Length: 346
Image 1 (tube, rainbow, N blue to C red):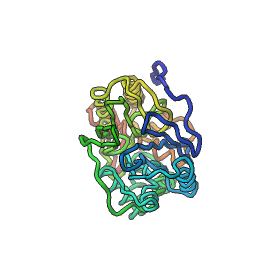
Image 2: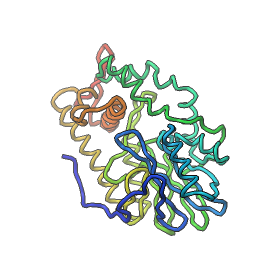
Image 3: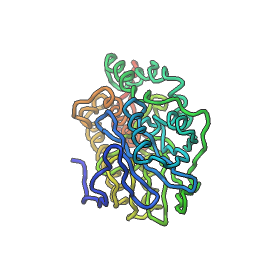
Image 4: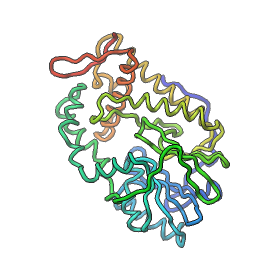
């Protein structure tokens, strides 16, 4: 079974209730917004600056989340000036309401170039998500035609939960510094879960806003996308975790995009590395017996019943492990005359 370690330290044993805020430190607040998925929430943070508060992430765009924001702004944040919106990455649970919030509050969007351009593309060209390349991609890895059609359309509805993004943004890049009042954050970037995902580290307070790169108890999704079928996001993710171990102290307070704040960064990074190592071992064991497709491996790695939304993430995560093993030369791709791909021992 997948490896586990000792429990992490959780300075806050419960999240904020809907519409409420918890003070993490002076000038740093934590809120939580609901999501309509198995992972049923996203964490949002507020950073105080000399000009007002910076919001960090937004939740998806739906009527319930817009109303939750109205409640927050007229309740716990009533009378407070909002100076801007930071978005850590382009997944809709983090950037979905960026356009609406920026327009409603007349504030700028601060994010990575990848985050801005990806969101603009997905919003303005939603037909890309239903392109035949997606279903062909799933079919080539062993999925039935019927299931591929379902997953490539319904499985990507999540990526449409976006308000119209702003036309302009302010770029944040790894290596920059963000000043929030007396607090300075070094800007970091991690890949694997999402390209150029932003993180923020305040050395004076030893606080890391980790977005979805490091989360307690759950592993962020690591997916191969149809538009980059030979990508190695798992290799990128492991490299990002190793840099966090190298650059950020073990006892930093980690504020992630989901679940609870925790202390024990290096332990959690090593747990995630071990988790993916275990997943790769599963594939090695199966491929030692016969060439295997992603469809063959899906019930091995994800034996639970999956919705189309969950199926698209699970299938793409299986591929991330397969591509990593192929990139390392441990296993090789076999492609038949019909274009179906299987991984086999060399």
